Amino acid sequence: MSEGNTEKEKEGAQGPAPGLYVHVPFCRGKCPYCGFHSSTDLTLVPPWLAALEEEAGRYREAFPAFDTLYLGGGTPSLLSLGDLERLLAFVRRLFAFAPGSEITLEANPDDLTPDKLRGYRELGITRLSLGVQSLEDRELRFLGRRHTAAQAEWALNAALTAGFAAVAVDLIYGLPGQSLLTWESTLNRLLAYRPQHLSCYQLTAEAGTILMARLEQGEFALPGEEDGLAFFLFTSEFLGDQGYCHYEVSNFARGQENISRHNRKYWQHVPYLGLGPAAHSFAEGRRWWNQADLTAYLKALARGETPVAGREVLTPEQLRLEALLLGFRTRFGVEVGLLLAAPNGQENLARLRETGLVELSDGLAIPTREGLAVADRLPELFLE
Ligand code: SF4
Image (cartoon, rainbow, N blue to C red; front, side, top):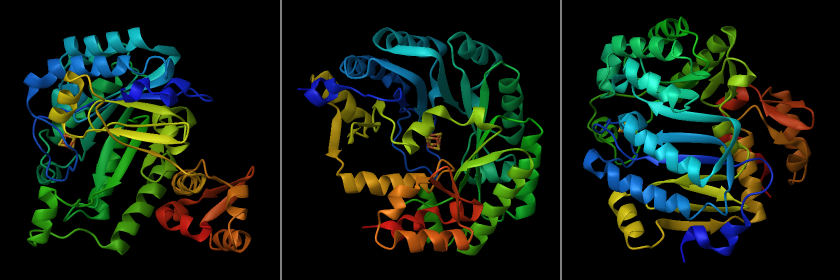
């Protein structure tokens, strides 16, 4: 029996409306820092769409309605408008979406044209997430990106005037040779466009990537912990001064209304369904994930089998630990009661307040800017 037809899936999700994630596993090439599985073989788009429709159909009883849809990847903007239209048509036929649903599409600047942007709006995309990464050509070349700074600025401007409810921009900092001054100049140029949302990620070399191999060969160095912290705090202060609220370790919104509704579900244990290779799902304290490899995913569905590669039922202790990990990474915070229930919880919470890492508000312990900088270390103080 397929994952989508098990009794547990039929129980469905209760409480806040779940979110739907669709993974588009295609890219033009491989960026050296990227550890995600993706395919450059676009002849696989039609079979992937057919497999996705088959997979989606298996979940229509368990997840009848959503209020967010996130098309991520990979590179969703590689899809033609016709393919995207087909995808959205079967997703909307199989599931209900609440009025005013947030529908996000990730795009690379070099894929965008005025026609495509118009098409996205006509297809009901409300939020465009642009992979700008940098506005310095030298840095873009280092990252192996296929767009130039000029293309990124064109895309930003075109996206912001196309009428989306929000344009989100992804940036990477902590690049070799980058100083706080050059990073500030990138931010300044970008903020001239006033995007509604920014994600700023520190460059890390992941195991198995080309970047890691080059790092190990001594081709370049990445900033150490102290410099990384300086970039982090500078970014938070700088964007805070420009009216962006630092609501998650890497995420900034121009006003509460621009916080990513879809990603918030991940951080607050709200159920979500992930479709496509490598997609993860969560509901009712259970998590399951699909085959990461596109070919394996296609073969499983073609044989009428589940593409699910693994699943786990989280114990109350695991759920509690995740609530700590996720809560301390966001300004949504952690319930104080959860912290006080831990051995030495009261003393440790008092210590975090005294050292300015956490503040209390409405029964929640909320990490400050300095707290977000060490978010991953805070949960260990409250383990049972
Ligand atoms: S960074 Fe994005 S565009 Fe580059 S290979 Fe990874 S998923 Fe594809």
